[in-house]
Image (cartoon, rainbow, N blue to C red; front, side, top):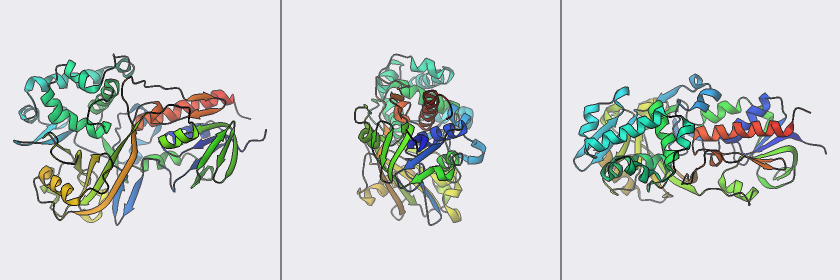
Length: 417
């Protein structure tokens, strides 16, 4: 049988690009098809009137092992955020930040979000995750995140006023039904590293990976319609490959591999506003996440002044604010959003200018218990599947998945032809 390539990768997100680059480095002839107009998958950045707007609020943690292994971190010119959050409560706003990295222990202890004992129990839990191995965390008895925290002595008050709103933006799950195994890995990465954004936007990450793949090997605007044995039927025609890797989004995986179970997806909506105020008037110029610790008090899950961390996101010294809410809310009244922002930042946000809205229906795969960190990627017959739904719902998980698939494909191909 004549083949068009050794391996065909369907989808140019992080998992697909990582897999393709690994195979190219090994000397295989690889083709990549992507349905959209650029590489990146869910990690895309739009440039609008001198602004960098990521499609959804996303961060990269340089402490991720796969980031250190597979990316030129220095070239990304990462701009870091304050490790912690500013929390609005009924008695005022408090900053809860890591005292090892510039945060105030006194400030965290006096924050009106729970008792000192509950805070110490949570700190001990997070530090315990940080010193444990990732494989050890994955072996812990699996329950949901809420039950794990309560069993560790963390009070319901602290969970509701700080931990829930903080982790809701990470898991896209405000019920804390997410697996404690996944939560433990997330807490481990937070303690070990500082969440950041590349100076040129989050899409700089997939673009860097794509640089390791011949440009002629990547075809944009090409959608996969079906897979039959070692043939993929594409909108551009049929493509025969010794290995076919499905690295599409969850709906794409479900269409191409209908018998493969995939997790539910969590949705999010992100708004970008230009704040017409002096930069220092918002969070004292610090790049820190802003949360509402008042239970169910507004539509927003979190907000952050992106330009405090990365001035390159907004030219001419403008102040760019990113705010998100769980679910799809593209038609939410701006008056409700601006009203909540006014409370969160203790200012009048009525005249803030909306510059971007992103509804993302398949932002993250749910990571509910029972959670397995390593799902099979070799489906047999020369068909493979890659994506963070096979690993952890993170940049780390997507890249690890891509590398795992590449290793399996190399075993399957058994060498160069």
